[in-house]
Length: 460
Image (cartoon, rainbow, N blue to C red; front, side, top):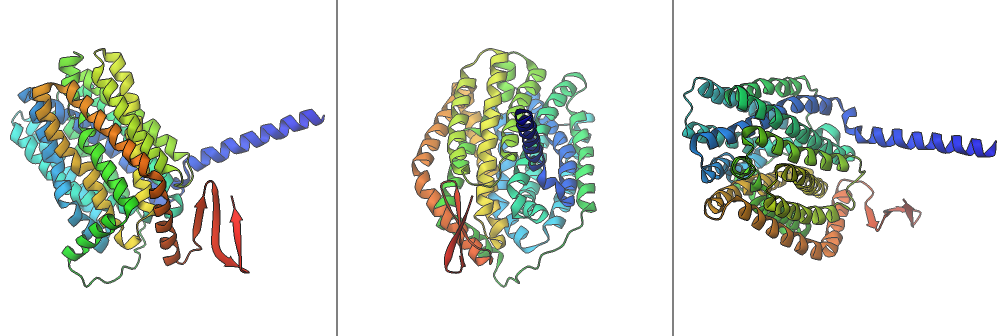
C-alpha cells in the first residue's frame, strides 16, 4: 500500500509539474491585448515571409544576379539603420499603439502596390527596389515601437515569455510562409504571394484596433528630438553589458545573417532545386528558429541568458560553415535547422537581456539601437555578401561569415564574467529607482537586499 501510495503521489506530482510547465509556456497569453497581438501577427507574418521569399525569387528571376539580391536587401533594410533612432525617439514621445496601427496600414498598402504591378506583368527591378526601400522606412518606425510595446501588453513579469512566444510566432510563420511561397511561385507566380501578404495585414490591424489600451502617463519632454536620440546612444555606449550585447548582435547580423539573402543562389546553382527548394530551405531554417524560441519560452526569468548568447552565437557560426560546405540538398536542409535555432536563441536572449536593463523612459530609443544592430547591419552585410559572392562564390562568402561569428562569440564569452557583474548592478539600480526591493543574484540564489529588521531575506 505504501509503495502504491508513493507511486500515485509521484505520478500526481509529475502530472502537476507537467501541467505547470505547460501553463508557464503560454503564461503571457493570459493578457488579452497580447492574445490579440499574437493572433493577428501570426497571420500577418505568414504573409510577410511569403513576400520575402517571393521577392527574392522575383529579383533573381528578372536578373540572375547574386549582387542584386544583396542590393535589394540593402535597399529594404538600410532605412532601419539610418532612421531607427528617429523611430525610437517617436516611440518614447508618442502613443506606441497608434504608431503600430499607422505603420501596419502603410505596409499593407505597399504590399498591395507590389502585387498590382506584378500581377499586371508591369513589374521592373526598380519597382522592387522602391517598394523595399519604402517598407524599410515604415519598419524604422514600426520596429522600435513594436519592441517597446510588448512590455506595455504583458508587464515585466511576463516579458521573457512574451518575447519568446513572439519569436516562436515569427518563426512558426517562417516555416509555413516560405513553404507556401515556394509552391505558389512555382505554380502561379510571385504576385499572388504579394497579394496574400497585403490581405494578411488586415488581421493584425483588426487585432490592434480591438485592444483596450491604458495609456501610461509620460513625463513631459522639453528637450529636442536630437537630444533625445543622443540620450539613447549615450546610455548604450555608457553601459558595458548593453554595449557588448549590441556589438555582438551587430557583428552576427553583418557577417552571418546575409546567408538568407544568398539562399536563391544555393537553391538554384548549388543544390539545383529551384524555387520549391528555396521554400523548403527557408522553412527548415524557420523550423530551427521556432525550436529555439520555444526553448526560451519554457524558461522563467533572464538569469543565465548571457551564456546562451555566447554559445548560440558560436553555434550559429559553426552551423553556417557546415552549411556552406554541403553540396547535398537534404544535408543542407538538415544543417539549416541548427542555423535557425542558434540565430533565434542569440537574438531573443539579447532582446530579453536588453529589455530588463533599460529604463522605461529610454526603452524605445534603446530598442531602436537594437533594431539598428539586428536589422540595420544586415543590409550592409547583404550588400557585401552579394559583392563577395559574385567574386568568390556564395559558399565561401557564407563560410567566412561563420568564422567571424565564432570569433566574436569567443571574445564575448571571455568578457562575460565581468559583464554579468556589471549587468547585475545595472538591474539593481533600476529596481531601486522603481521602488521595488532590489535583488542580487549569486549563482542560482536570489538575495533580497530590502531591510527586514536589519537582516537579509534569502530565497531560492
